[in-house]
Image (cartoon, rainbow, N blue to C red):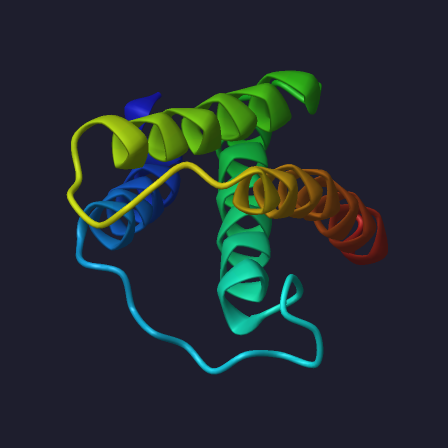
Length: 119
């Protein structure tokens, strides 16, 4: 059963490593709040939910809510860890919003792909 979630576990470790490391100065996007950083958060959580849903799908569980909630809680944990333990990092509500929107979008991508490919 754990084997089905191996890609999601590896991706979670990547997110943890990026969250724990020193902040990367990224160029600003077209608005200050919608930057490459927020796009990175969004994309990371699209992939995370997709991989979690793939794991659940492989073990025969097709309900999306646990994967979405798990990803959101993981994102919240990463933001709290940045605030609490990692120097020069801090909690950002905009990052949390990007994580949540990415998680929801990951479900949409997964659902569309699964139905499109008739799994």
